[in-house]
Length: 61
Image (cartoon, rainbow, N blue to C red; front, side, top):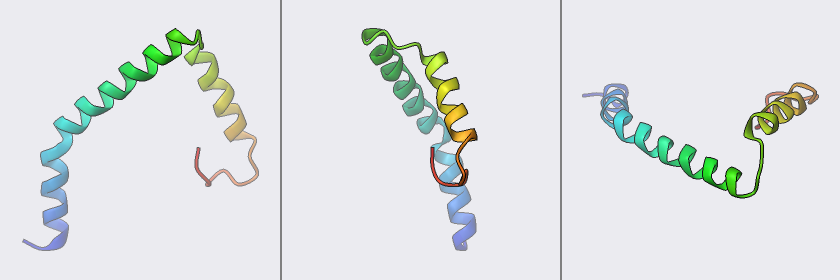
C-alpha cells in the first residue's frame, strides 16, 4: 500500500470517531454559550461579517 492509499484508509477508518468527537465539541460549546447567555447564531453571523470584510480573507477564521 502506498502513502496515499494508507492515508485514505486511515481517514475512512476514523470518520465515525471524528464525528462523535465533533458532536461532543458542539455539545460543550452549546453548554458554555448557554451558561454565559451568548447567542451563538448572532455571534456566528457577526464573525462571518468580520471575516467577509477582511482584506486578506485566506488567513484563518
